[in-house]
Length: 253
Ligand SMILES: Nc1ncnc2c1ncn2[C@@H]1O[C@H](COP(=O)(O)OP(=O)(O)OP(=O)(O)O)[C@@H](O)[C@H]1O
Ligand SMILES: [Mg+2]
Image (cartoon, rainbow, N blue to C red):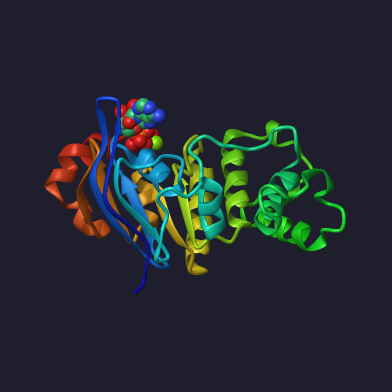
């Protein structure tokens, strides 16, 4: 099985705070790799180090055999590593359809060249792709609605469509079900299973253990910036260190 992303010896400090300490991770092609851990464990910091939003103090991030350290976020995105953010980043004044078309055009034409004001004229192919991405997340019926007017759960799904339309090699999901009711969460689990069946590699950060254990092939646990365990869902479920640091506290929530 080939390795899509390899993180080696990554350290990151913020002033005196050690947010990540010697983090090592390998993400296999086609797998869903969950990263779990308590609030403030360093999960989002780790993803930010992968997508170029943060530069690690030391260590390496290799994506498809290429060193990513020092590359700009848009270059990493263009290389096929796409993150769906913890806080939805959408364009509230634009329609759902326009929101999904923008990342598709930016990918095709380059982030500094595409023209958002011409985005739907003569763009039937992208329009169709955007409608398919919206259908994937169950939002196609609302494609004309303003993105600002939809529920928080729907905004997260919209953002997922904005990620999916870029057809990423590696999709990074930071708490994709945060703010969703159980019914919406279950729909999102089904959707993420569907894209797994298409062979898309994913890293998923989640606090909801139902989501994690429904989707993950492999789980790594971060606590206070260190990977304290990594293994199959069964190995993690039965790991005493993990129970103590995390699962014990959250299983009953
Ligand atoms: N830009 C920053 N400047 C200073 N400190 C930061 C910054 N980003 C994160 N931190 C700190 O680094 C630590 C790790 O934060 P991070 O957001 O990575 O945690 P997390 O595991 O994603 O938490 P959550 O589950 O709450 O999203 C925290 O103590 C946080 O306050
Ligand atoms: Mg976070």
